[in-house]
Image (tube, rainbow over all chains, first blue to last red; front, side, top):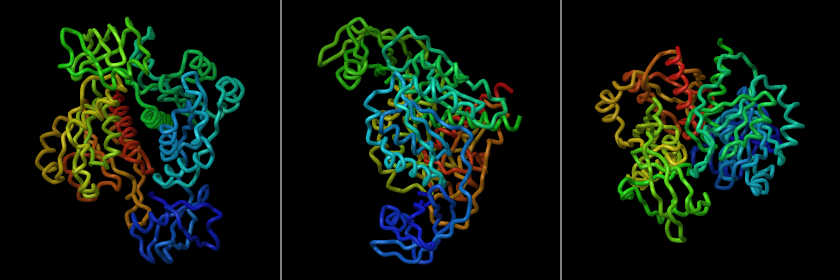
Length: 259
Length: 259
């Protein structure tokens, strides 16, 4: 927790009293004393510092002064085939930490139907996962998360209107079908993104399920102007793939601005 | 598990009988039947396929044919300030999946001493974590892992001889001291790696502990030719930072070869 995040309605006349895990963090991990200053932020608002007015075993009282803008989000937003809950939790926190502003969780052939019934998809549980990432990365603004349980209505009806905001569209695609049972599918070895020197403001990156997108899905994304984008010949776990693809997309993006 | 990995001494006259989690994976996850072919590899040896000769509730019998070279390792090796065990397990698997060939686990001021007593540091536990990564990424070669419980002997006595093999040396360094208690340390915002257009064969990337390297440590690494390297202004968790920094280092590396 590199910043203490406060809900806007917790703060009254610049003061806040904490009782929960944040209070425990301030006392036990930070070992804060009266008069110390802590880094704090208002969720979806400004960030700044707080003066510790008092601590007890039951509560921590702070006076809050938040006037700084939170860090800018990165230029890449994320479409993610819904992963299993434990992986989703990790990817949400990680994407929030990396500065993704919008996350669309979608269905795909190789997504297990039960994943859409996961309790983690309740808004408060999603927010908890996102806050962990923001606390790590010192940001206040929650990514906007939407859930799309049907692939075709998303890709055919919603995506065209969404995609216009993103000049660059990247389809993360594993180099081979996953699973150690051999199939007839060729093992391809895609490398550096073809767009690396294109100037662009915003990018939309679609990351598939563990087994990859099926051909039908790849075709639909390609029709919407998505280009295949792979970090190399290795099949990575979804959380690793998201971190790697976001980093490479952002690096290409920055090169675009320089070139 | 995208490849079934076999220990060399399990295979006798091209045959192997499995009883453990690999047998369960073959039956339950892959749903394999007699006559199916599976992707297999010999640990630290070649990879290829195996014919399922027979399955029962207790065992899976395979005939193995491994003649293909495993994928090449990436050009970046890793020095890692020892993280907490649960994180170490994840980073070892992830680094193995990404193709890191050598991992040096070292001490640093902000590494908790107890981490060096973790049972995860036993060779068989480390190997188990690495194998998970190799099974994910379809590789057979275990990264070489070494443990260095004292910072100064490592950096002063061992590192000079190690570093000569790496023309590029990168010091992963978070942009600000972690922890929401404010310090006087300035929040810097380092960006793209300065070496992005240097041609080089091998890179050595040193990733610090959660709270970052202390000044003394940064100084010692700089004396050994390490340059500061950060993915941007956000403080990332160690597992995310390793994935992002490796991806960016490799991307710079590949640009070097192209340029």
